[in-house]
Amino acid sequence: MPITPANGQTAGDPAVSTPGGAAEPIMLELVDEDGTTIGTAEKLAAHQPPGQLHRAFSVFLFDEKGRLLLQRRALGKYHSPGVWSNTCCGHPYPGEAPFAAAARRTAEELGLAPSLLAEAGTVRYNHPDPASGLVEQEYNHLFVGLVRAEPAPDPEEIGEIAFVTPQELAERHAEAPFSAWFMTVLDAARPAVRELTGRSAGW
Image 1: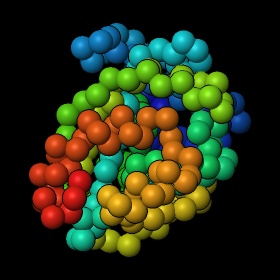
Image 2: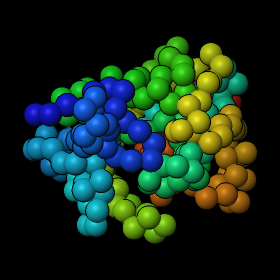
Image 3: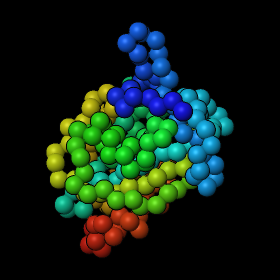
Image 4: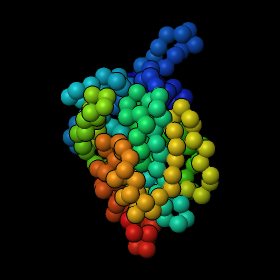
């Protein structure tokens, strides 16, 4: 089962260059409806309509005030560029634990390690992206956590970040484009979010 090197995921192109100059595809882990691994597929191919069900993760990090860290995806990303979404999301490499992938991509995209990161369940969804024509057929592992360090976003991955309260999120969501999957993963993670942030935070 091929595993793409951890430093191989780029923003604009779902393939990486090897030392010899050849493009090496990024592989995703295909799963059945129960989340059991059944094979692998190249990243872009897995997102072509109607989509192949694959493993993914979504991270929601909060500051000490209970505000959610959002990111606006870089304009150079091949999938859902320029839209707002949760703190971090992505795909484990074949054989990589979702928790390890979540921690890895949080470090790669935001330059920080959460002071706490906990599992928050899973959610399965099918979300077409009208802008790109790609489809998210995902079995998504959810994680919530706390962040105390200052984020240092990678500009190839992230165009902008913002910490928001529930009210500020509602206002932003009404005015700005968000990823097709954002509300699905947030709603699925809410019980864990409320346990993490407390009732006063309003999530």
